Length: 483
Figure 1: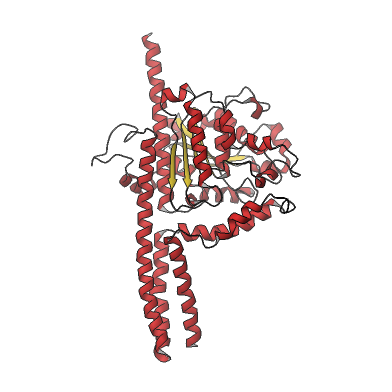
Figure 2: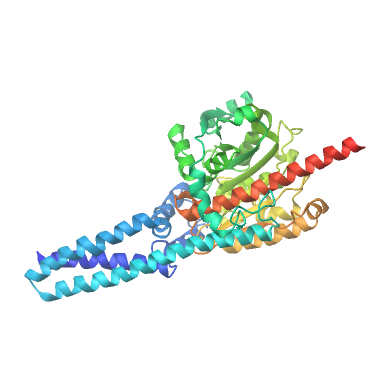
């Protein structure tokens, strides 16, 4: 009995040490095989398999890896306390009755685990401070002042300083409760009829503060969820899936708490719906927002789009195909301009073999169709009828949307925006690029401080863009009155 207990204790402590070391050294444990599997997907050998099955296999590895690296400090400390106190004491008791090496091992295990726990907590606190510091640097690079109102707080700290970034999440939680309008259908009767059973995905939710309807003309943030464009990952069906999506995606709720009107969009998914029809649903949702958001206190003249992962790709394409009649069948003359775009670890390269099944089940489409919906390639021919600021938040240790693709996309985007006089004259030709070291794909889906810091940076960026837009409109109105 004592030997078995000692063996179990040894395995538990060893597993805990491996996980702690993996976090400290920024090494993947469960995901080490994901990259080669991910790259093999879409090849001739794997095309006979259902893409949804393939991706679910990868997700089964990804979720525990995300938990290992993004778990908040408090649960981790409690788990460490259990291992340090209860388990070694149990092993020590058995050791006193049998052999001394068991007790010696327990004592050594306590010391090693205490050291690892201390190092882990210090590393996590440094990670949080690093996220706030890099957020401040990214905002400054994009030309933001200390605050949209060009002032400091009472203590002399810039409002988006590292200290304020850390405090922002707790301060925001004290904000008002939200009004949540669920399952609002979008699309014309003809479009919804043509969707068949998949019409259950053509809904959106609106979130806003209680005073939004009375105040009116609040800025609008439209968010598109991720999930590899695949049914059962980003969304399934019914209200439960939408509630889960809102729980995972913190940005819509964060922006609504900050005084914006947030819209969280569902869209039809693979395998029953393919691109570009998936993207057209997003265009239809944007059309609905333009026509109806005023009833919820939003300003249809100021709309920013955002999304994470696959949703980031959709949001980027919305910003790069404004008023493009090719992507607005039946509503070619509807205004689909947006005033800002914020992308969390977007899937910018759809030119890979794995993406081919999203366009046709038999892979008979030309490669140009994939490149046309790939932000990394479409940015070179994108049209911008209005100037808008871009923000990209990328997880540096991302196994699904590689950081090298995000860096390449930002470079191409800045080059393209620099060619537009409207962007250079308004000072929004620089992309606000925030790269978070050691962050994994989906880091913002956990209630960890780093997710809140990145959303605080998102709010600072969009709020500054909105204030700049309002100031320009006021200056234009005053100029017209003087004339």
